[in-house]
Image (cartoon, rainbow, N blue to C red; front, side):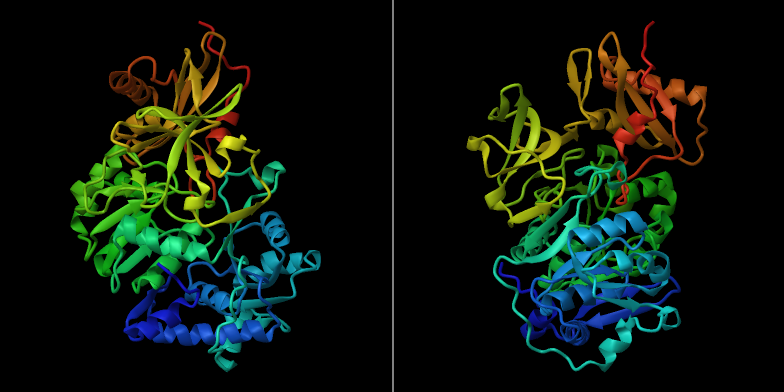
Length: 538
């Protein structure tokens, strides 16, 4: 579908001016609704402020306002003013914030007032491209000489005519997670992905195909606004389709999720396996006592979803959790399950309509395309099926001429005879043990099905006999005590369900799992906790 960057205006013109566009839930029990008409009015005033500050087409505006209505208003205002929207995590430290602002040459920064003194002010002198800072939140925290964004918007005359985005100009820039680019603290720059306005249509089309999201329905995307997931499914897709956004300022703890789903008419819930594992760890009884008000579809993204989580959702919440797969580069969902049918537990699904995927293998001669119906390899997506993008920092090497036009994801995947895809692990995380390649997720998924296991990360440790052996780091659910008894029970459970070859030979109880900002377990950090000299020799 064709999607204009002036999303609120488009819905007003379509007769939905008085329909709900955004519902915001605040820390202190606030519950504020915005109709499409009200949202469009705020966007017009905010866009006028940006243009009045000299924003030119193609200039980048950083937005670091967290789960607040100002994030939605700012994004739409940036596009209406012809700029580039760059969402940033509200909890970034000064070093990662500095490098991101430098990389994409942020000209204006809209930020939370409480963060300004701690993070932004010390950086201003180091950022020659940053011309003005606009703050939201407590007006008492806004220093003299800094623009109060809310007050400026109230005083502005609305900008009714949008500034057209220049053809080929970026509309949005996102930074990838730690699993698809080097960690900034490790000395390498993060990876920035810039999409043009075509990505907006891809986001809307994929929400229609993967969720069957309809006008008038409410969708709740729990992703932090710093991630592309929020831009796609917590902002663009619902507004493009005439749906309503639910935005909750409170972090997605299990009890909070259950309460929101019980109180609010959320039809589609898009969350993460981390949130789902928290629900499962809290037990089925509390979830059964809290019946979702309108939930008809629940989906997950960010890391693989184990089969037991899919079934848990079906039995306890009344809807199965559906896995999906995509990356910042693809701009929208690539693999998902048909919303008209039950999902296949443990699978990421099939390609979205119009998207072509393939599996490839890296070897001594380069990269080869795998054509077998049932095969394991690195997941690749044909670029001309996707909205175009370009990257700053962290780019991979060139592909052979015959494979140009493909995007290699770095994810190792199994494709079955029916065309469903099953995640095995990152290309650099696959474990070579006893002459076979083992994807950590297939081991993790089995261990996750044990009631004691809350989270697990499986890595390979050096082994002089078999190159590597499997080590499982495990966090336990409440009510279970880490110890030798549970260790032996889990080892027996793994051997019973996985067989000797795929069972971990070591099991380490871990309370503090290393994570990316989006909540993914960083396996390479777990592997670094193993001493290089530790090998099995007996």
